[in-house]
Amino acid sequence: MREINNNPEWLGKKFGRLTVIGFRRVENGENHAWAWDCKCDCGNIVYGIRPRSIKSGQTASCGCLKEEQNIHNLAEKRRTHGKSQSRLYGIWSKMKDRCNREKSPVYKNYGGRGIKLCDEWEHNFQAFYDWAISHGYSSDLTIERKDVNKGYCPENCCWITKEEQARNKRNLRMVELDGEEVTLKEACRRMNLPYKAIHLRITRYGMSVEDALNTPFIDKKNCLAQKCRDHGLPYGTVRARLKSGWSEERALSEPIHEEKGPRRKQKE
Ligand SMILES: [Zn+2]
Image (tube, rainbow, N blue to C red; front, side, top):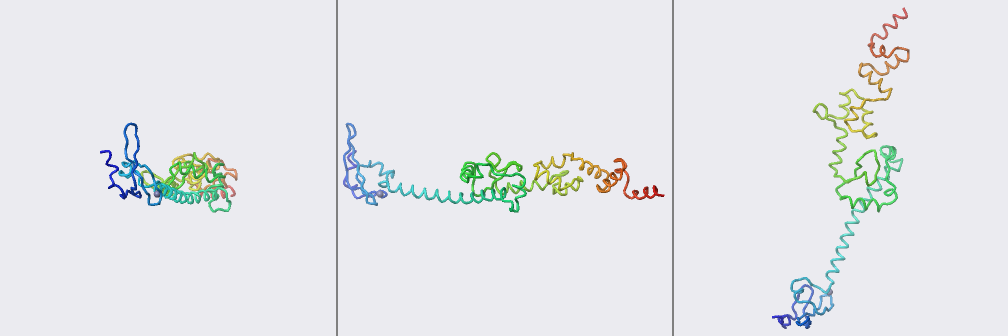
């Protein structure tokens, strides 16, 4: 049965790129087997291939097929590498721009408040690229800093979807108040809080929205401002009263319309 592989009928048969052109006897210990010599489409001649390997398709060329596939794979790899490289390069250079270039329109929110790239990324795109590829980068994701008050570095960055990013930004602006979703501005209005200061607490000082709304202002000036709000009096008026020597208690308790009254009385 073993001899069947030297049946002349195999001659001229084609498998993949290989055409059987001859047989050779291969000694294998006490036994022997028949191997095939083949001519490849590319012109190479290969001697002594195991027939089983050819019939099963395991060997389909002199080796030129695999080589071509390798070249193709390599080209494909380069192509996708090139693509992600150029997108990541854009992300990297925009990052540097908003942190370093004072004329950038968003510099004040980045470099202007100390947001920088770590040394490694600042001077080395390849370092940023390697981190991105090994940390789940894909072309539909965008870079996000976990802590908005910290800079761009491996520990503080991750890749998130645009939807996630939009949600994060939205969360900054929307607040749940008494079971209702309202804008931060509206929440401040209802809670009688200074919107600008609250917004700064969140964007510049990294407070959570909840903390920003619930932490009292400890600044002296703001303490007075808060008292004014509590008493429903304009801050300017109360300050003017204090400057003219009123006690704080009186400055905060006397309604505005009576202000002129007592003064006039004093003069009379
Ligand atoms: Zn070949």
